[in-house]
Length: 193
Image (cartoon, rainbow, N blue to C red):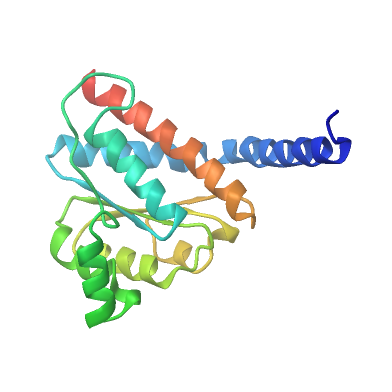
């Protein structure tokens, strides 16, 4: 016999998540801006650079994998780099400089004018993500951020903020995945038209 209390918790979690997913429809204009910027970048032969901490680092890697591999269409590989992919680089920068510089130090040399930099922070306040965004802008990249928590401090520094209306990290991450799946699907389709 199932525990009704557990079932109620499951139901409440799913309903809570679905409400936040529904409210994210309001992000459609900025999602479209992101798609347009990414397509323009890739058509010009530039690249997408992604970064975040923890689960957001995993999301950065997921997006890079969708672009380099494929989302749903067999097509030419698209240039994307997740800055969390190299533990030697991350630990060297953290040890020799500061963890706050772990992304900006990489962006300093890897970001070129015309690139896209995508920072991911569920709190909107990750200092290393903010510094990565700022360095990317200085190097001439268009910056996009997947954020939560009303955008935190990062929303003030990014060109295109995608702010999930929640303070719940798991729900923010769930919506971030929907957003970047939509972006990957439409970018891919536009580039094979």
